[in-house]
Image 1 (tube, rainbow, N blue to C red):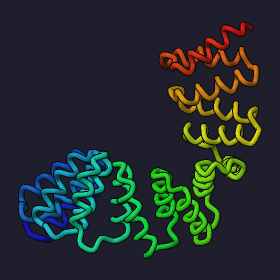
Image 2 (cartoon, rainbow, N blue to C red):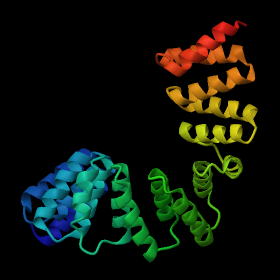
Image 3 (cartoon, helix red, strand yellow):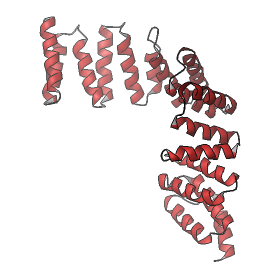
Image 4 (cartoon, rainbow, N blue to C red):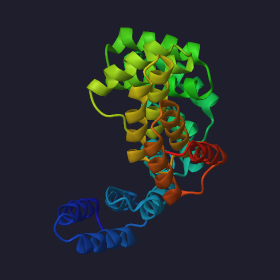
Length: 289
């Protein structure tokens, strides 16, 4: 098959994908068979599978194409990204590392993969290098600050928050990171105020963040405010044992015995009571109504 004929077939297959994808795949497989030394049909077929999130087949197509074009860094990138999408971060990094002179997006993807693998220090090193190149990208700051919090370097996290605010201005996610950082530093009032500002712009979507928010409320003398925050967390994640423990403890302290028993009953639907919850239940039983 000549070059022009192949190009026309690929264009036809791409057009057919929206109308008759089975026929399009047949055409592409035909093009692969008839052009065993040309990677283009394999790449188009891989793109088709990738857009439908059939990553295993996409990877096989891209790898076959890469064998025909071993210096193609873009192929290495999309193979790495496909492995990343499958959650195979080790193999994603293998392909990212094969790219010569990787651009910032590649390095960011590698840092994110390392973060998911709990290799936080390596991720931090890459993000710090990226900031020396690009200091106005919010996502670089976000990932870096999150990793610094993971390793317990709250001071550096706070410093990068200040730097981010100077470069990118106010950003909702930066408010959340500020709240979490202040809480780690036990600066409860500042943390609480940051959470309040964050929730004015939208809901908190993780139960673990709501637990921190509630702790801030309790620490600054607003336990009544902490109760609905914890209840909101349980709506998001009814399996969060820590939320039950904090909520029941707070309800008992505030004298809401009936509500505490109701929460314990809900907890029993999802798991066996922890030693802490058993102690709180025993305390309630000893008090009666």
